[in-house]
Image (tube, rainbow, N blue to C red):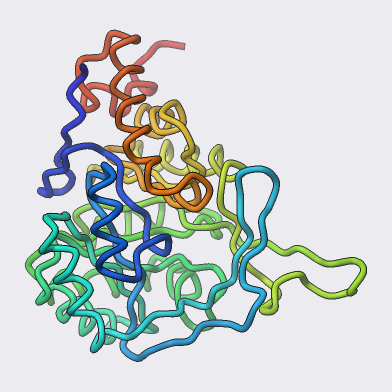
Length: 306
């Protein structure tokens, strides 16, 4: 079978599939379960300074066959309550990447330092949630802000820093360049797309918050396009995110330039067993195509003459 091992910004992964932040990742036992099911690594739920209840229900509705529209509001237990969860995941042998969010560079740096102290292998900065006021994409749409926050975190920690980018901007690749200038070890693209659904009978938005984020199969072509553009403009590794349901979906991202991929919505629909399926199917697909390793496939679509 083709070699699926990859190294992401100095982090060795047994395969390129990461559990995406926000799905299945609030507790240490669920993180451990995803790793045991076959994930190459797991990313925690995005954690802030204080406990946050999130928005009132309804916060999630199913969209189309394989998608969600959600406005959770970044619910989390706060950094003070999270050490035990990371310890539980790490004790199982899971490779854990910690996700943090905040309103400004100072808070990001503080949270990143505290998360790094828990022994995570790397950090992912949530600069891309599309529905949290004063957080996420609201502080991640401006390249200057991305650069400032990233630089502050890079200076505060000694582990790889990954910046998760928003697609809700005119130039995602420009945000990737800003992260690279500031010392990011990698970028991940994309988070959910800002979206809205209206219940015509109730005559109001379906989600209690109104605006939400769209995930699932519908956003995959947008994610692949963002990865393609970013790969052509930065030297740091790219993680592909958005609508990965099958091994072929993952390979699209990889051939567009992703070194690893995050899986989220598929876990909600198919359960954590999806990781084992994806690992097996990607190995078979690479063998079928005569590609010896996943590393050989990274950016391959850029090298094939039209």
